[in-house]
Amino acid sequence: MDDGDTFRVPPVPLASGRLLPDPDGRTVVAVELVVTTADGGTVRIGLHDRHGAWWAPPDG
Image (cartoon, rainbow, N blue to C red; front, side):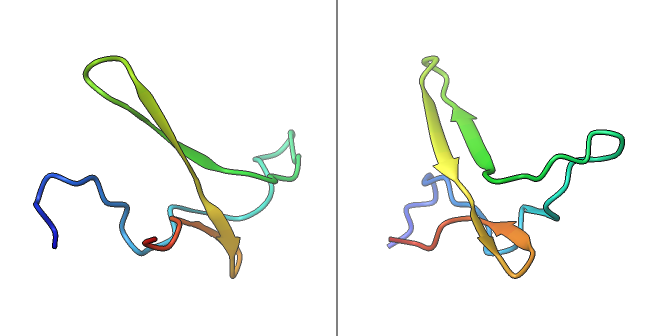
């Protein structure tokens, strides 16, 4: 049950593509969402590469 306060990442791609902008052009191999809390803590959420975009992990 959703309590309304749980941070949820939407089921849409958060980024797309695999190359950084020119002239850099390096291949992206990982994307993470970093969440910082009021007490200074951080949570890193690794995104998944599917269908040419970076998606939030499935609910587990």
